[in-house]
Image (cartoon, rainbow, N blue to C red; front, side):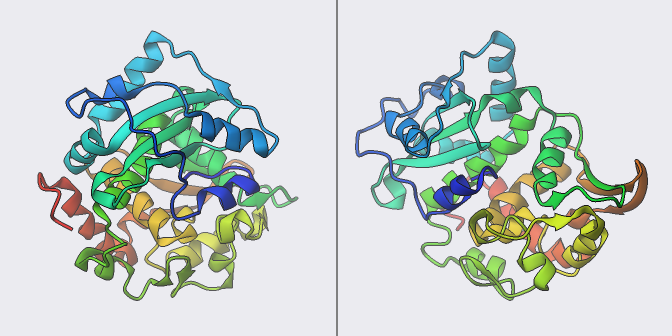
Length: 306
């Protein structure tokens, strides 16, 4: 799940959004780019029920090229799992959030099939632009002149969002948290008390906007330096990681792959009157190092590594 309006944060943090029991129509040998299709009607109906009317986006040749590049950029394990479990993806205009990963065939985890709907506008943003836009939702303007900007490179934002959302598919398909795997135990130990309750962090971190299904606090810009100083005292790689242990995993995988395999930066810049005030790189901080090293399992050619 990616951030959006508050009702969607609540909606998407459910353990699994079930769409229908209809069997998906795809061959597991079809290239991932061929999974691009229409949004299931029940996903659209969920938006309509909340008073929103996103519409199908007609992809251009250039946009399809960006989608294909993103699929090809995924870690090996993600590609294998998606070939077996991704029924389709779609793109919507006027979508209020960034992405929605939905279960469309609610079998046991080994047979589950998924659909992912994406906001089409991200195909025209860089990762830096999109992350900056998302992070600013945690703050409200004040007179301090302070602002938050991400430096995460110039790759298409869809590369990051697909990494994040497809990690949810890997997690659900392999039952990483469901079966309390050794990986899950190591990943959550001393960090999470349960799926949504952090064991670390102070009140500033634990009540940020991304917490509590989007019902956390929106802090004034002037607290940004304190916020990231506090973040560096935790094993979390981003504020969004504090949403739940599933979002924590998706963020860790996305940032690990972005920085270590795609050669992109991941820096949070706090500026004052457009001049750098502080720079934070949580992905390479000593507090996150042990957990980030666990991400190497996602580069295995075997789906039983968890």
